[in-house]
Length: 165
Image (tube, rainbow, N blue to C red; front, side, top):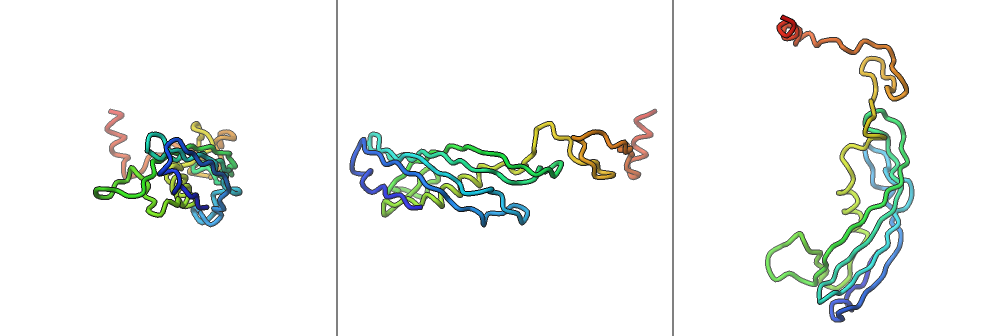
């Protein structure tokens, strides 16, 4: 998905709207696809006072399993991103700007990077998720399984005795 921004750099006050969808089915987490359909992208590129900024939103369905209890999740997500776009840099590399020497922005590459960097490293169904029982593997969100989970690691048993004295 390419967006031609070349006319924006010469015309202050000019804007370009764009929208489309990205197919990110090849992006996987733990070997499983994480997007439950196409990613919808829409936004605007504007030249305000000689500065070209690109602001866009993405909407997608996150299809993963909870990292604590392994419950499947299909969660709709909405994210907003903005960047400043330049034709060239006068100095060394600068990560604050997106450089488009020919005036064409590869929005698919930019949006994919933004989404993946914005996703949390740990995805849970609920902040209060209790996870799985380490003894029997039961989902503790559905109720207590009755297992005795207070066993002390035998390597630390002597320390436990010291704390009781």
